Image (cartoon, rainbow, N blue to C red; front, side, top):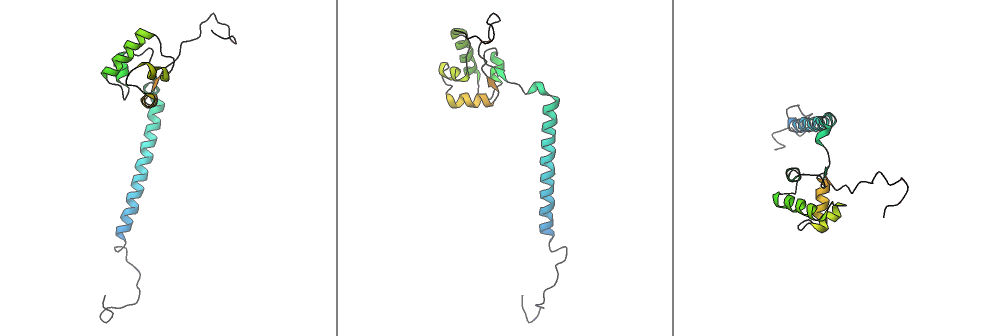
Length: 134
């Protein structure tokens, strides 16, 4: 800007000068609106379809069901089922990681986060409540 040819007195900005920043505000509002819509749809889907979000018991799951868990491939699913038939039910996911080669504590935690659970043996009906099982 040349002070000899142009005025140096401050003048208010016109709307067109700030359009760059107004567009950013509109984009921010759109992102917030989309995020809120996504959250709302996620909550509504979870409420309307509760059967889809369930935990899979490693003691009763088939090979196809195990393969549906993120982190379990066909070989690992086969190893889990073979060890279950050889050694009996899994008491916990720690027991699963101890007995199945290729599943360590970190992978067991990731499988638990993906929806895999190991329900221990159920109490027998002949055991009265409040007594210890041996």
